[in-house]
Image (cartoon, rainbow, N blue to C red; front, side, top):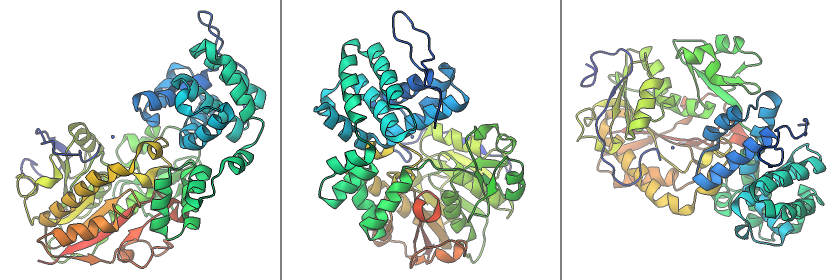
Length: 495
């Protein structure tokens, strides 16, 4: 029998109820024509629309805590930027945001002034100017002149200052600047060279066992990631999906993955519009499949995604459940994210509830000892997806860890209550920080009154997947596997 109110195992449904708010939420959200293209407005200098869109996106991130992937598409439309110019603006925006810490060190040295003593609009303009000089195939004159005109349109009195600073930046290439500014301390040096805060450098080194390999992971964060699609099992074959898309190929490891080449808008792909596929990193597909493929004795009908927003893993699990006469309950504490889950899983045997995943045993749709498979895709720092979220590395702080790890352990203990004896729980994070991975799993199991055993996750991953470690948990990495840095632990309730 399906969950209360499901009315059978048909399309995805959303049961909306007010959810309690207790502590942190489960899911907090080349060469080109360098002519100035925009005509003067009201005495302002002409501004290249692509550079203006990039500046406005970077400024929105720093001024309004916006997210580049959300604001940039609208800015490109508003500025009439498309094609190669849109690609230029995208690289300029994302590159500037990724490299902010290193750009700031270089600009501050060139200005002989701390960055916090430079007006914010000028500061962001100098960042995008410096990025063009140090990272892009843009002539020095064009990079300086267009940025100075941008500054003149924003803060007229600062145009001369911007011109002087950028000319100093352009006197040396990036390698020379890094050699000049790099500190002796190896972690601080890696932080500057690879444009990550030092605490993240340390976290990667701890997880990988060496600073040398951590630097490879940091480098991978600075490369634009490919777009991965998930071909939903039972609805479309990955090879058929890849064949229908120019330049696409099936993924290396996930049996559901398709990798897109080049840019474009995935939402325009018919299979995505029709709900037969969705955008999802190959690593996220692999860790969800660990749960679905784990050996199980007894019934295998009731699955639970305990913190399901925005719905990617629920979509894959729902498609798999449909092929096995099973159904998925997808819980999400944030109302708007629960709505996203319901939309993402429409037509699948997924019952979406707006509920707190910690309410197992209190919520009638989350009864204890009732689910055969439970996924805890825990809220985390997101350090494993920094290549996709360029601003995140500078926003996250070590102080974010205590409330997140507390929530992770509470959710995992709730999952232990939800799963039946003999059932399995997969704990997943998009972070390699050991406090959010091994430590959270160990502490949740230690503090739980329910007995669970760690199960080796490696047999449920493709045999071709390299460097999966000694088990029983598995940590994926961009530089090793070409995926986000996903972590998975598999646990079985013993009593």
